[in-house]
Length: 325
Image (cartoon, rainbow, N blue to C red; front, side, top):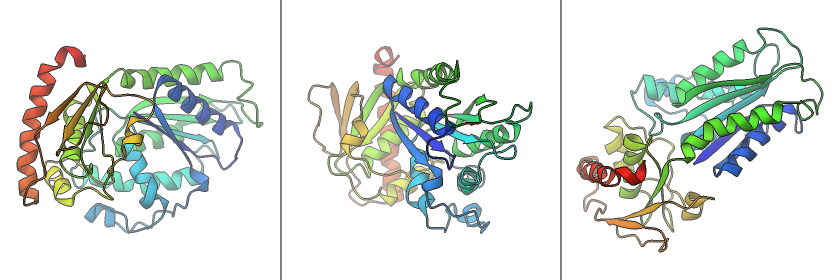
């Protein structure tokens, strides 16, 4: 389970950094994997309003959004957005990242595609401001709310602190750390309570990725799902992706994953091997599903495989209903 922190302050050791670090450290202590993006240190070009995303579903600008950040957002189960308040809003650096996520809005509302994690992903905004105005955070919270909607995350509200001006003010705040830890536990713990199922394929590019995506899409509220391979491919099979896209499931920015990255700090409760892959965790209960890549790969043949996998998933979930909770 992944928690992604988008840290929007250009100050390296300021109060926003303290907030994000505290949230990620608590999440890691609970058992989640975490990833921090220092937005100011990334190469993010401002949106040029080319409108390509609304017509074709991708952004032609090649920068860190393209190479890194879009994929990190898609992989995340929890997205934390944090910023100091500049003129009653988030920093320009963070706003630039959010503007470039118009791509996700277009894929969702123009192309009618659903992120596989859209039913379970959570989003939180955290803000810090030097002054104490009543409306300090309204603009930032509105932006965060619509950003989370675009990326397929339920908005879990905000955690804001007023009157924080000097570098160590939040660290010395009487209740801040406790509030941050409590909020992290409230958001992260229910997701970690799900049983983890790991699908293992030879390359995590075809049927294994398809099976894990369908399991996440259909049953993500009940189980945590991931997929991996000992030697992952460079990219997912385009015919497999097209077959799921035809079903309204958005495969953009998903990547094959190495086994060590999928395991993280949490061992799965069950491994399911697909495509003649070997079981990498002999001490963990496992099943082998007799699915292999179609002999003649195409959107149509992968579509038939998807039908078969969905039936298998239905049977698996019913059979393990008690164990899965």
